Image (cartoon, helix red, strand yellow):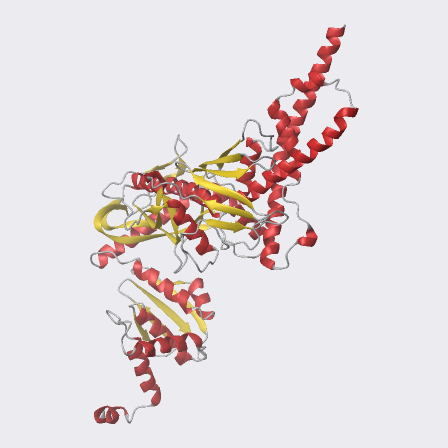
Amino acid sequence: MEQLYLKYQQRPWTETLKLVHFCMDKPRPSPISNAPDGPLLSCMEKLQRTLNDKSLFSVMNRLESLAKQKGLNSHVSPSGTACYITSNMFYIEVQLEKDGRVMDVKLAHLGEAPVICDDLVQHLRMKNYDAFGKILEDLSNLYQIPGNSEMKAKGYLALQSLEKDLYSMSLLHRSQDVNRITEVLHGKVGHLVPRTGGTPMNIEFYISPYQILEAELNPGSLVCGTKAVVTVEGTDTLHRLPLSPLLVDSQAGEDGNPTFLPLTNELSMDLSACFLLKFHQPIPLSLSNIEEIQMLTGIQITALKLAPLYELIIQSALKEKGSEDLSTHKSCFIVSLPDCPKHSYFINKGPEKSNLAGALVNKIPFTHPKCVPAVIEILRHQMAYNSLISSCVSDKCINEDDSELLYFEVTPHKNTSFSVFFIHPMRENLACVTIDVVTSREVQCSLHLHPQDPTLNSSDGFISRSVKCCMSVPVVMRAIFRNAAKVGADSETQGTEVDTKQKPKLQCEQIIDSNSLEESLSVAGQQDLVKTNKESVPDSPEQRLSTAKLETLGDEMEKSNTTVNTETLSRVEGSNSTASTEAVMQDK
């Protein structure tokens, strides 16, 4: 201690402070949680996150500390106003003013000229060091490829080639006025955002109707669907990766699919790496979809833990809704809708069968750009199915008053189909709606009733269109119950009038096709689908948004069916006219 005291006696306090910070921030190879200095390190980290960096020295100190945490080197320029964060493959230059404000941030990869990164500038000016640190981590991971610097540079070159091909594919058959939502749901590679600075290329490939409505009801809000980041990762085995773009003239072949050049020795190379579609949150995928993706890419998806698919979907839905309890042993959920009794959904996870198993997938490896469109389509299909099941999940499992609950049971079938069982609104028999998600853009539904039970005034076509429009089981079930209530009210009214009227049009009624009659009767039910009593709208902003979503969904469902019902009524009038003409001719 005496020697240390004499050594630093003549040095200024700022240097001592800097040395202490350096020692505290020095990364450890194997940190021990119960180490004696653990609480001190934790307190230092909390203080550093809380304090505002208002001086040049404090900002420099923070950048150097962040670089060390990510395993990178750092040094300050002789002028003292620039900080360099470096590795063997890239470096970042942060230009500061004397008061500590960020002027500019530049990024340069090995062999490339430095470019200004607006995203890094924005993060540092907003003091968002977590996001800045995440970008440093992602940049480092780009070069985590076995081999020397030349091999690591080849991996980065392969990623650049992939990005160019994906961007060219996103422009195929693309009109100038296409909007983002159309690209997300129908684009060959979704809505693609190229890599800029430190932000990697990302692909947005699915967005739910509720998210679309939220964006429309809140202009300027950043509502994003499900995204995947495009990157490269080192592997233990060799894979042949392209080192230059392979897409031929950005034109699709005769079958509508893009045409690629073959992977020759001049255009490709064997590297201990592969490309990745990396998700921000793990996606529950069925075992059959996982196997199909592996057949497309030719690479196994590793570190999978198989579990019942419905448990994984429930867990992901609860996490998305911010629930503190993510346990999946609870299968009964209470869902509230405006102007409707509460729904109780029991999700039957089904027997232990292989086709009902699944896994949470964080990333999908592949080696060729031609795999991406097919993989995106499989992911869209799975997300559509997951959205319908998740619509039955809520963070509320217990209801105080069970007297007005409507009970439903969701039971899985093979592949991407399931059934919703419920008690007939006017009888005591079971009724069932079977929902088959054929693709992300096609849903087929069928209603099954006891032969002696009255109709619910909801045709299979109406239910299918409703599901496709809102992708919400509770909203569709409420529409069915409202249509059934309309039938009950109409039958009572017709029963009082039938005794006072004659029945001269019996022959005409028999000519009308039963399906057309059912379609035409559903107009009234569709118009009353999600109308809400404005006086009973809840006051919370979240509930107001939910109510507005439901009303808008109802309007969209009504619009989507107006043309169909108009054609149906025209057919009914035409059949009536034909029947009357034939009757007159017979009398003559």
